[in-house]
Length: 322
Image 1 (cartoon, rainbow, N blue to C red):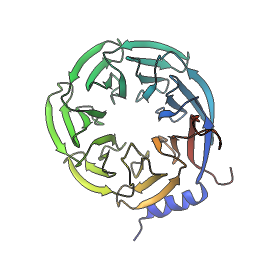
Image 2 (cartoon, rainbow, N blue to C red; image 1 turned 135 degrees about the vertical axis):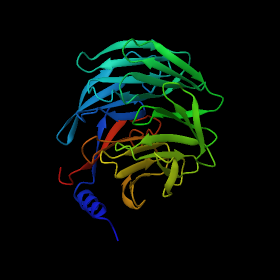
Image 3 (spheres, rainbow, N blue to C red; image 1 turned 90 degrees about the horizontal axis):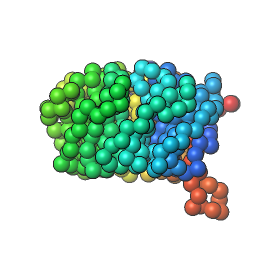
Image 4 (tube, helix red, strand yellow; image 1 turned 90 degrees about the vertical axis):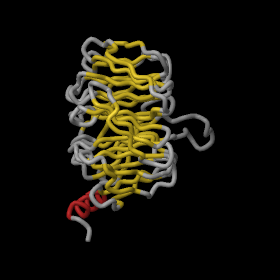
């Protein structure tokens, strides 16, 4: 028997399943993220820039392009409670903090390697950045100085604090989830989550679950308190690159090189919807208040010149008649 929520969301998506694409960059988009108030969406690209859009009802309007990085912007994230600040991680060995009010870079932090993943602590005080050499640097968000640095002996993929800010999670190349105490950074536990490379991790806004995606094409849902696997989602055929929980924690979007984004009901694992794509998806992000999903794919320009990257950002969940 389908849940009331399941039926409500299916009805909603039947009337609101339009996707719109917005020109954003001159090369592929690696990362999209919403500000905490949902007013803005930021995107980071291989073209070395970040772009910011304002959500005006059902339209994304480009507000600004942020230049300064000397290499690809691989990942970005917003301050957890200040909707004006976001931070970018780049292959140019820097992290940059940007303010949308002044449209300027307010800090450039030099790091030791090419940066590939980044997250902001729930209390807003620390930014963690991971590089290609499996070093994670913890940066003080006020002074923009490095607080701590950890070299890991395994391939570090994605990193995240738990919602309570007292544990730090890393997914690794051996299929494990490594959990450290925070701020002590002492190992608490290592969970054998997947038989192959564990790629991404996301916490649900309610703090009840976290999800991991792996190279075995599975998404696993974990209970935060007990650190046990609750269920697996297995509709994708390719390594899971990106995950996002909806604002109410009840839907989980996952994507890969499959030409669709899977939207699952968290409590049952049932497929709620799928968003059709023409190419592999790099990044997905649910809006923090509405059932709108931002995403970016490996799109190519035009029918004839298939080598040029399109660099578009897409928004799903718009009214069919819009």
